[in-house]
Amino acid sequence: MSLRELRFKTRWSFILLIFSTLLLVVSTYAYFTNEWQESFSGQMGIVDVNLNAYFEVASNSQNLQTSSDVSFAATTQTISSTSIDLSVYSDGDTIRVDGSSSNDEYYTVLGTPTANSLNVVESLVDESAGALVSIDEVTLSQVEANEVVIHSSNVLTGTDIAFTASTKTISSTSTDLSVYSDGDTIRIENSTSNDGHYTVTGIPSTNSLVVTEDLIDESAGANITVDKVITKPGVFYINVVSAGNDSYFEDFRLIIDVYSSVDTYLRVKIYEQLTLTYIDYQGDETELSILFDGYMPFKYNTTNWYDNRTNDNYFYYKNATQRVDQSTPTEIPLIENYFSGQNYSTYPVGYSLQIAFSIEAVQSVQGPQNVWGLATKPWGGDW
Image 1 (cartoon, rainbow, N blue to C red):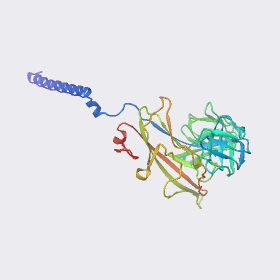
Image 2 (cartoon, rainbow, N blue to C red):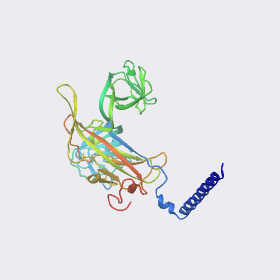
Image 3 (cartoon, one colour):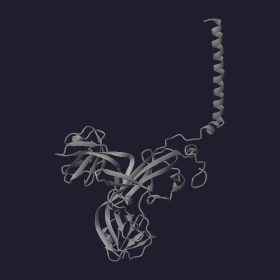
């Protein structure tokens, strides 16, 4: 190495040394004078939310009673009657009230009822006797909302199809299930307890296949239909025609599960499309989008949610929140029931509602300002 090259490298090494020293001094000063806090004002942690869309379905009705002398007291959360025996229900039972003016809903029995009265956990509305009210005991279950089907193939029907919960297995004795493949989405219809969409995992045999979702134990006997379907990702089907259907409008529920480890603000945008499906003169199925003004009449929880749809199409959850613990999310209902004492005005046969959601979550510290571009809360005040 020549003397000139040595001087050149020495000069640049000295310059790098000075730069590194200055960088160390500046970063140390920023740290101990809280200047670092000015440049990074967020929180360390995860922001994670999940949307849970399902239908709340009542089954196993028993102890049905009907009378026009049933009354409701809000202050004591009491249902009373002089002619029907309310002691047939027990503490913890789920009862369904139908036909009242203001109290049609599902309720949880609290304590031991007497012949003439029972108490419930949920709130009631004061209502005198007069309406012909029905009360029965039911079992409530959650039926997962299914995506809209756009194509069906490999349709099979048989009375030999059974379901095993422990192994998540669908089995048969004569229906050939090997027509399906790993990763296929299959649809089950007309079963007693397992109607819905499932994802095939592994390679099916002639007599059995395994799915990733949970099943309910069910013996063969029902005339069950299985087919492979292609769906619209993230677009859910809601029945707006027939009450009692497992996907009926009044039974739709929407819950947000918050898994964040730091305080989180969230907002949800809802996309609604009313459709009409019919068979044309050539035998082809045609789907039409139907224009309608306003919004579908879901009962949104506006206690802690702010409806800002007229401005930016979002619902905002007004409280910063995070998970209960590492394994337990905080559940935030946006649609948790339907209007008490009201019935949804149904559409003619052929109509349906297709619905999709966009959910966004940001940490509470500077998240709404930096990510959503909102200097203040849509409902008023600073973040």
